[in-house]
Length: 171
Image (cartoon, rainbow, N blue to C red):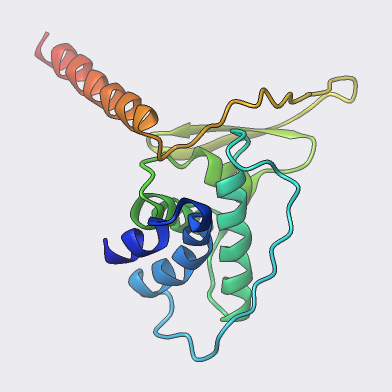
């Protein structure tokens, strides 16, 4: 909790939690005993932060991949995604699911990744036909999975799911 508060106190520096959180998660999950050397991490991106295109997951995955290679940590793509979700949940303080991290860690060019999030399961990689294009339009509306409205909707969704399943089980 202290690391979360330290890294997210200043909104302009909040992005650093996505980077530094990877170090913390690797230590806390026992994947690294210690970092015996520092790390210089250069970040360059033209992805608009807060545009709702998984920019935080992409940053987390890139950092986690770099650290796992630099410090010889063996993680499969799903373990990378799961570790990045922990960064987002525990360090950044955003109660997001794992979808963005999975697609950033496991997605492939010209394919659609079909997955089920509960339980976490990759169903299939579907080829995108050559005559199909996807176009994204930046609406300019900011999106944040740590925003209070997102948190409220996510909590309400899980509560609703629990109520529905409990009703179905009693019938």
